[in-house]
Length: 259
Image 1 (cartoon, rainbow, N blue to C red):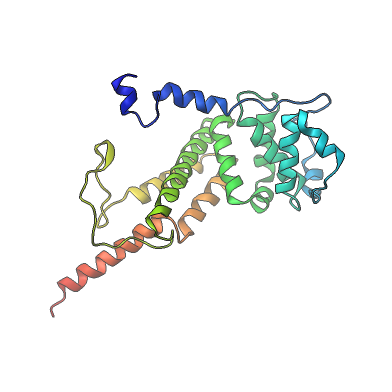
Image 2: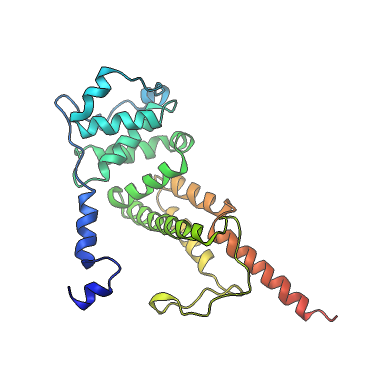
């Protein structure tokens, strides 16, 4: 093993990372007679129909031969009571995460968001909305859709990583850190630390993503909804930093006030 591989967080370096990533992207094969709907499928009918509660039947037990069918049935369990359109959306996303899929998959996915964004935002939870953004990042029909999808997908993926690690600190997501006791160790990759007094990284990040999403009518509702939710959630790093900034400002104001 080379010195560079020993120093890398991932044994084997980027080649191992890419190999593991690609192993998760095997296509969802179809059994005989199975297919995704055509690009011009009737969305209104799917929007009106509801996914019934799951039933333990012979068809389900016999479905093990088809990865597509297994995913379809798993989605119907998860999305029972939601619209058939939401279920189709989930199946399209599942196929688009893989290396290959039928040619109508990406155009149909984009069409769903172009024509039924209000319905999808009402039917899909935030996890599915983030999955949709990730899908736009790779399969969007325009450069803006791909840029917004990839940028927001990266933002929410990093939030998931650091918020998961933060749980081991013992601090609830809604609890900001104390101002005292800050480590003076340098940040990785020679980054400058964020300034509580004057830092604008957070507003620049959110503002640029918001403006970028304004340039495409298809992805705009989805992107703006998730950015708005991130700005209103009281448990994010944005809210915690704001609380810390306000506490620091109050402390500085008290220090300037004559006793």
